[in-house]
Every structure is written in structure tokens, then in C-alpha cells.
Length: 314
Image 1 (spheres, helix red, strand yellow):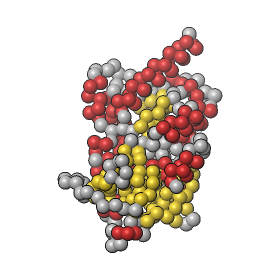
Image 2: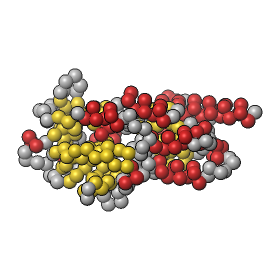
Image 3: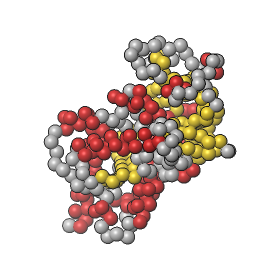
Image 4: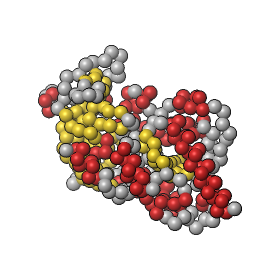
């Protein structure tokens, strides 16, 4: 049922909406982007793994794929239910990984706009470096949208962006072409900036979401040198206020900004999402955490864009 529902919403492009699957843990309501959910399963026995993180229950193989199971109540330091039959596994797919998360119950699916999602303050689930990526209100209920990439990265750091992946890139010349980055995760923003700086890119401008980046562009659209001041835009998809798909659509529909290359760098990139991103005009799409591929794509797109501009101005 989840897979069928997801296929329907993928037909829509750039609407700045998200569909959230609500689930509960110890009476608390949380949410996950439906695009990350493969299916809901009745829990199966798991095989415990030695030396694993305390929130990792173990592994199990429901069909042809071995899945790691994370006990979300334990990770969040919330009470675990005594009735195991009430538990459910949410099977997810992001960052090219399949992971099962144990929750207490699944409530349903809600469609909301990213504009209605607020960034949590610094006391909720750890603030900027915490695991709450946004707060949404639906029918009087506050839903805490969790940052599942952050959760997995904390449990298994090697699954996130690694600066060491660029060790073999060799010595590169410094590059001052301005790159605008829209990313709401403080952790991932730091990692991306460190990696791009290691690759030689020195002129990086950070925005906390697509809305901030778009507002900045619009405030400078009458500047004659605007295309000199932004060589490339790199955006995540999931962000409060405005998501990366909506940002891409706005940029590519604009008579001036459409010349700016846009790369979507997201944990959600798969075959289905690539179709959607291409429809919106994205010049490139890369799944996190493929940082080496990202650097190569940035190199190529900036070089191609600069070459086109030189021919036009030449």
C-alpha cells in the first residue's frame, strides 16, 4: 500500500508538499517522509550483532535483503512498550540503504506543505545538531519529523559523508566560483562544506532551506552581475519552508536564473526521484553520501556553464 501511494505522489512536481507517515512511540507523535518508506511490517525475530550500538537490535532477512533493525524508542530514550505484538517495523530506504526502525504504532499519512513545517528550537531533541528536522501541526497535533539520516549517521558514522573519500583526489587548484548550498542539517552542511573546501572550492554560501536561497536570489535578480555571483546551486530535497524540488522548479522557470546549474544532493535519490528531478530541470542528481561523485559533477557543470557564457558573451 505504501509503495502504491508513493508512486501516485511522485507524479506531482515542485508543489512544495510532503506526505508524512505518522507513528507513535510512548504516546509521542513522530513523522517520516513517505518517500523514505518501503513498507510496514509485523516485527520478526532478529539476530543480535556483537559490539553494535545499543539502539541496534540486530539483523533479520524478511525476503532477499538483510536489514539492520534500530530500536527507535531506545535511541530516543523513550519507554519501550511491554506488548511486543503492538510494535511495528517501518522499513526505510535512503542513502542507498535499507533499514528497519521499530516503532509502537503507525497512525496514518498526512499531506502538508513545507511552509507549515517549522525548525525546532535548540531545546528540542538536541537543537541544530539534534534528530528533529522539523515540527508540523496537523489537526491540532504536533508531529516531530525525525532526521533519520542523522540517526543512522550517529549509529554508523561510516554510512555518512566521509572527508577521507577525497584523499585520492590529488592536489587541486583553488576555485573561487560561488556555490550556493541549501541544506537544513547542520551536520551535513558542515561535512559538505569541509569536503568542497578540501576539493578546492573556497566561495561557499550556506542557506538553511530553499526559501532562504530563493529569497536571496530574488532580492538580487536586477543585479547585472547576478550570474557572476552564483556559479552553481546545490540543494537537498527535504527542508522546512521550501524543499529542493520546489526551489529547482522556481530557478529553472525563471528567465535569468535558469542559466544557473542546479544539483540535487539528497538521500532520497533513486530511479523514481531521478525522473521527478529531471522533469523539474535539475542539471544533476546525486545520492548522499557520494561526495566524490558530487565534486566531479560540480567541476563539470561549472566548466560547462562558464564555457556557454563565454560563447554568448564572446
